[in-house]
Amino acid sequence: MTSSLFEKLWQVHVISELGDSEYLLNIDRVFLHERTGSIALLSLEESGRTIASPENVFCTMDHIVSTRLGRNDNTEMPGGEKFIQATRQAAERAGIQLFDLTHPDQGIAHVVSPELGIAQPGITLVCPDSHTCTLGGLGALAWGIGSTNAEHALATNTLRVQKPKSMRVNFNGTLSDGVSAKDMIIHLISLLGTAGGSGYAVEFAGEAISNLSVEARLTLCNMAVEFSAFTGLVAPDEKTIEYVKGRPYAPSGEQWDKAVAHWQTLHSDPNARFDQEVNIDCKDIKHSVTWGTSPQDAMPANGQVPNPDELQDISSTRREAMQRALQYMALTPGDDINSVKIDAAFIGSCTNSRLSDLRLVADFLRGKKVADGVSAICVPGSSRVKREAEAEGIDKVLIDAGFEWRESGCSMCFYAGGETFGPNKRVISSTNRNFEGRQGPKTRTHIASPLTVAASACAGFIKSA
Image (cartoon, rainbow, N blue to C red; front, side, top):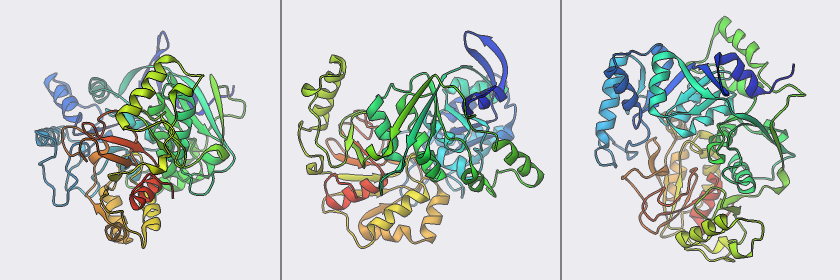
């Protein structure tokens, strides 16, 4: 019998079938952060329960921490320090690994877990954060959960889960120069819509996927949730094995050999069946940018803003949403997107804040300057990424170009009552969401790749590199 990668991962973790497509799954690892981690940990304490496997539970400070240099427990979010302190105290009582503010491995959960080898091919990993699907880039079965489910997973190493259908998205051919994984996922969502992956576990496959670095695969799977997928997956290969090797939490010795032997079986068999299959021709993928308030409101970074009244194949609901987005974003149909002036540029988030992202940005920015009137900020995805970038002189290149260099954290990926670029400010951002107010009340966000963000910052207008 042939099986897909998703089916193999699912079956090895099934404890029992519960009926109505629900299953009890074994959960290998749980990752928490300070915004929701304290809720799950404190609730577990109050119920009189303990963590079943504390050695497999990890926690970081990332969501509401200040990313300003010289930071402490004080946050940009009013009252945020209470979340930090409550999480710290609960994690210490529970005996789990905490990557606190001063810990050398502190950082964004979905950056920290792969770079430390906590996330590995073939495991199940859950976190109370929707972008946990990022880790499917390693071939892990990973998805976001709520605090109640986090509490259940902590106490039992299990979760009751509705089994999704399976989809394979084949990226055929090769990418044009400079076109990135971020452009690939934006292109897919623009074609099929934000509901295109609803109810599916999505495997990304094809020649272009094989050619991507592991960190680029993480970027691709990160936005599977913006596609409404249960998770995204890329089959592990020799690149993956080399990436995981030697990381602090990776297997070693005899266990490493056994792990590699298992990981090499984690791929879809040649005749595996999928509930849906999608084919994308990579020659059609351009440097992309969003124009509206949904990731599906996207276009080539040298195109024109669409006119919803001229589109014949959309629903009235979609047309109204596009019109509202145009109003919020203060754009006019037919405008060249390259003529749109920006106020700020942001590089960071669990989507695009890894060392490979920062290297590309630094290569572009050498000898260039951020345009007058543009506020530019770069926030590394982890303290480790920050140190490695500084060792290569990347920080100096960005600072010389006019970027502010920060400590690691989620920062202005989302607004939680804290730091923002300001009302009506137009931001080009390497983040993953652009709904109304995502980066602050009335802030207008255009999602793009880090390279497009850097090019736009220097031009003062939305521009591809």
